[in-house]
Image 1 (cartoon, rainbow, N blue to C red):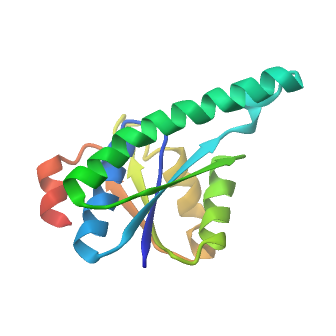
Image 2 (cartoon, rainbow, N blue to C red):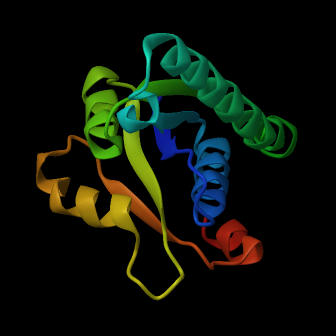
Amino acid sequence: MRKFLVVLDDSRECLNAMRFAAMRASKTGGGVEVLAVIPPEEFNHWIGVGDIMREEARERIEVHYEVFAKWMRDRQGVEPTLVIREGQAVDEIIAQISENNDIGILVLGAGTDGKGPGPLVTQLSRNSGSLSVPITIVPGDMTKERLEAIT
């Protein structure tokens, strides 16, 4: 089954990327894989403190993910999967794509703050020639109705 890979983070545009991925997966018989990346600098403390912080980060991610997962299950009939990786976001996204042959499309949300599309879109666009999947960039300010119309 072809999966849409979408990145879970605290950005506003993440919401539209999630919606788009779920709607496309629902209409095409695909799946959604949600990737959350924990940056390594969060754990540069003593070993015990770093372990506690890592576990707290994972718990926050799982709670955040469950909000999206419930919507995907209830509204779109899609059962997403969650993958949590540690490292630099771009490196981990590229690694996830290369390690999972089911991923067919990377879905990213574009920023709306006027400062550009956002760091992930910018960095991954530069690497797009070396990716084995296409990138779909969803405008962060696109309405839910417009998303429904185009998916």
